[in-house]
Length: 204
Image (cartoon, rainbow, N blue to C red; front, side, top):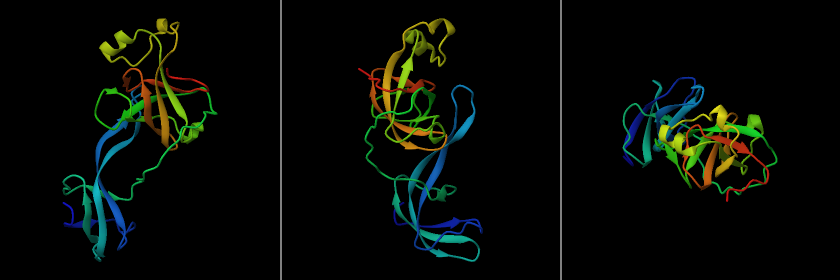
């Protein structure tokens, strides 16, 4: 818990630094693409922050937990994670026809709504920028898809008009992925839903 002393084993080639603060975290689950099952990364949960007080010659550090969000246990990981708060203003999309999928959500749920964070399998590699807006679109019989949690659009449904389901503002961008904030959702979003970068699109 907060202010407890802990001991941290670290590799010799990656020493910790006295006085530095590090995040304590654990892996929650692997993230795989909902369509091709390709491994994309690991979802992690941050449990707290530790400050290093002392190092030993046996590659063991002693530190003080400065903040514990949840109980911290043996076996949890320690390292520097990218963690910051920032205000993101939507900007005009200048890239079009970039298509991707919703591949993960912060919580272990099936249906995603407004003001939730999602992960999209498109990033800097596709010239995606912070502030861009992805639009979740669907074609076909939504009732059947919801009943079966079906991810694919059937070939015979491609003749149906495209339906705008939600808008997602990009708040952080990696090379192969983006983190998006669901700005507005008319219907629930599902893992595997198609997203597109479009110019002058509006979710009414």
